[in-house]
Length: 97
Image 1 (cartoon, rainbow, N blue to C red):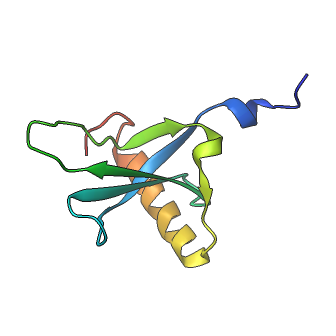
Image 2 (cartoon, one colour):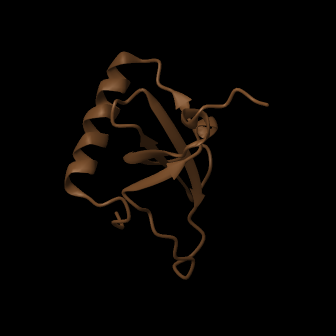
Image 3 (tube, one colour):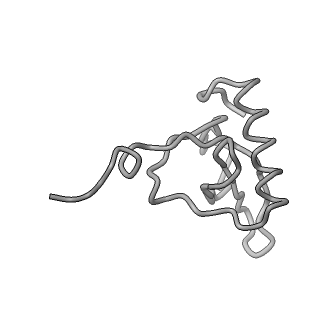
């Protein structure tokens, strides 16, 4: 028997806090989602291939805890927390952003 708890297995809701274009790769967009406390983040890279390739970006996504990184920088953590909380207040998780 494992020692997993519900916290280890339940998906975590994270909110869109940043959308940037990659300097290294052409046609790449980086979506950063964070927990409302700003302490953990999830980063998704997406290729911008064509206008016919429609993939909506939602206000929030639910991800396994194992896919989350830790935000070490306190200023960035505060920024992510403020933006995640703002997004949660004004959007439903499935809202297209």
